[in-house]
Image (tube, rainbow over all chains, first blue to last red; front, side, top):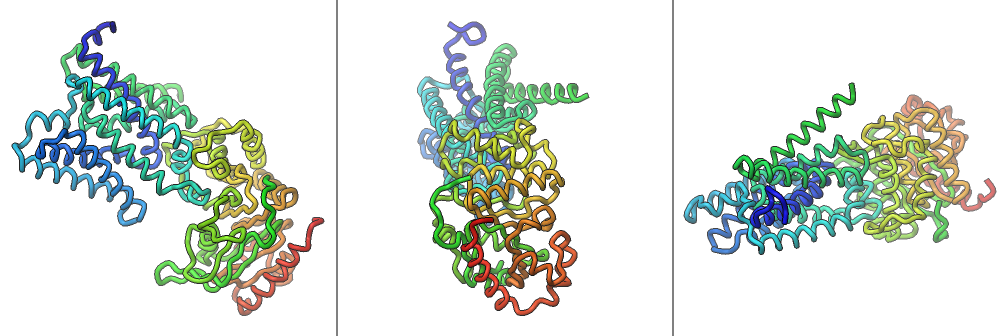
Length: 269
Length: 278
């Protein structure tokens, strides 16, 4: 058995789901941050909210509808960006506001904001069920395997997309893969930290890792490490203080970043 | 560098190529051949279409009219992309890029191994050689984002060389690069040309380091207004080392582009084919 604060079954389930999310979100975030698409997770999260609202309205498990909406939305963002129809940030904004507006309309068409919808907005990791943990673990394994296969090419694209295209890398397909991975990660993470905070787990651990790492392998390792550390410590602190786990996990990640940045400044003197 | 698939004809051909961005015409009937083992510089004033010509050549921009061939095939359907090495104008690295110089240069092997290819043991010496060629061996483990602009550019040149290309196309590769590194750069290009029968097409405003080893100089101003040897260019009173200042004056006195360009293209293509004891 695990020691306190993970001795209870519900905490062990939360830990399992949280560790998967803590590893996967920064793993995808590395490539988003390096390509200046840090807010991609936020944009996709808002589209996922419309999917959750549609699921509640249609009486379908919201995870599935959120997954469909997030994948479709992320591919639209990528298409707008790559075709130059809209700049990266404008494409994100279009989907960002369209998603949240669609979600609000769908929620209002049903019974309004019930506790089910709020669970996805703010996350409720302490109520995850074993079946959800299996789903999270399965999707997480898919994310890790895909990144392991594509990491070198995704990195080369982040450095220089024009060179990658001339070198024969399938830039369009890899961009689509990154978009789909982002969507899947958002859906996996929304029960843990909530749609509103999901992008934080994609960006904040990577920000800390950028200070610590010099190499490609280093930033992947440090990002995943900080992500998992934030989840484990965040869950413990949340239980001890009776706090919201999602917000606590993100605050721990922010604290790690602040410590690392301060340490770097001290060492630089 | 590589020794695969000897090329029977020219490695690159542009035949009466036209290209425009919207209504702005950039290339007007450009014809050019590059033969194995040639070292060619492409020069011209700002906005003359040099970078666009390179992008058309490597398949990034399809021409509006005319024919482009790389190794005998349309560049967009070229399967063995490793035969082509490309150094684009210096990309702006995102501040968040955490990668060593070695990471960047080693990514050049993707052109040869394929995008899912794992690093092989045999990649090591090739990457090391490319790093040495641009004088970055001592900085191989440095974070690339922390380097100066010139040092970053050398890393991108090494990345292209790590793919062991038969044709190396470089767009302003030595802008901001110090004199010692330019010499290392010159030597590595000469190694490619002399020992591996590689072809180099170089766009640069700073030809000083390579002026004495060029086979041909092509002057572009939407059309090719000169295509000949550095000696022939010198006969017209143009010094390559400072061509940026001289070129506009010289261009004003240039004759009709097409006739001069085409004639000299074919003369030098023949010269390159015949030459083997340089």
